[in-house]
Length: 314
Image 1 (cartoon, rainbow, N blue to C red):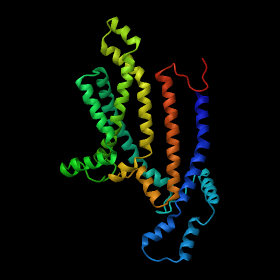
Image 2: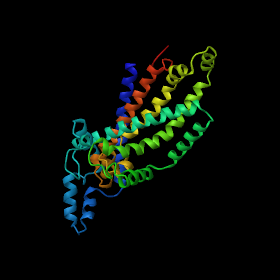
Image 3: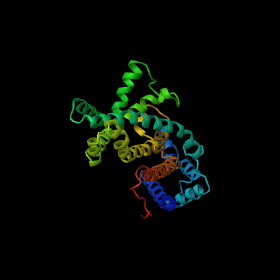
Image 4: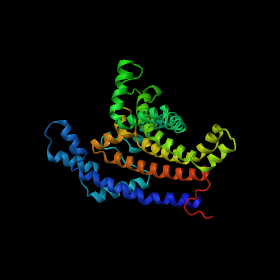
């Protein structure tokens, strides 16, 4: 196990280098930088000398490889750089956005579990009955609705008409996070409850379930003691994938509700060509997905001892 974990962590190094290099290069393809962006927003004519001086101050006059090597050298010494727009350290800016993203992630995942797991089990147990058709219909509708439409619908209904929640997030609180979390939970639950249903149905058709029923074992004991335990591998995989994407921020939902998280920070940085912030976000996403996949693989070993991780031998 230790060798497997160490191997996966070492694999993170070339992945991070490749991703940061590619993202740095792709931003240059845009053809403009933060200095030109600022000058365009002023709406006045700025001399080329002023533009060149501003670019030189930020180090944007240097060749691409030089800029990348300088940034990478600073990172290796614990310095993620300074934001071109705000002038604040990138690390402190990123950390200030993280609590909002963590709250949104935890709330969305809890709501998704509370909705998708019970409904998926109910749909599987009552296969081809009225409740099954009704749940699958709502799942199809939820899958068909884009997040921005659900966001606007919830905003109109619960914020404008009923006044239960603020239209725009007023801070990192449960009341402010409710609507963006519900928006994300609706989309994820609609997708995952079908997966839960399929997994439970597959387990219910296996021989050990048929044998347990023949021996007179209560169905509730079979369902919760055996079927759900066998289904946890699939459920954990689905939830971990969602955790990875949510921790990276959900740009559309965060922007609509003005939720001040990592996703909104990344969108603002991209629009302003704030390269240091973008690089910090790219690294965060890469680390998150590697870490989430690693935790998922490790959890398999405890949920199902038959699954062997890389490097294990019988």
